[in-house]
Length: 248
Image (cartoon, rainbow, N blue to C red; front, side):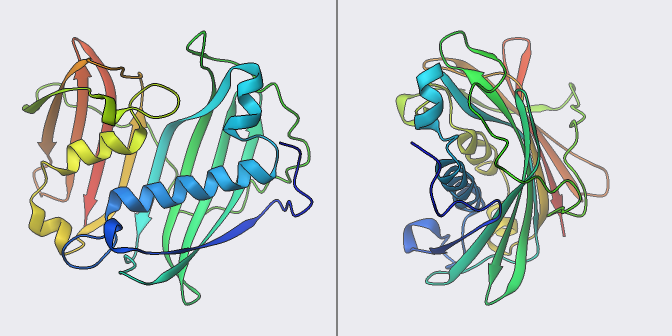
């Protein structure tokens, strides 16, 4: 698709929270929070001419490599949230994108994401084939207090669950959708902590893609003062994903 006449380098988009996106408390699920953020990023790429549809002409797609989310509060059912997004950096095969969520003008979520251009045939990163110079970059305009990082994985941690990848776990790029990793791990967190909105921030590293019928193991560990929980997902001897949860 061509660049939209309404294109702007900073996009604001409104979303209404519906009941399918909420926990029994009526507040937005952390997984659906990530979905809304990523859908906003996708909407910005569409009007900027670098969407999945545009990139597939060159067998390319954006895939998420790292994501950090800082949560001050969660919206509830029927809230209308405004998500703002802009790009911090974009060059060759890599991009850092910022996102913020607001309710009634108050910022409640900040997010920083790191994306890579992925060849969906060769299954490897490569330089973006489309022009992107029309995007103004905002390297100093950060959405989070801390940037994303490489998560330290404790290889001695406990295995809590074994999982087989099913068709429902896959996305349009034919690998496990990034939100599914988060969902699998949060299913093994004390539900009371989730319902009480005790998550202060969380960070995800996506290292290796998973495909249909892959068998994986989910591991968990917690630090001594119980303020941080770390999860990893492994296939054989290789770590495919890591999640670090910070509690309030």
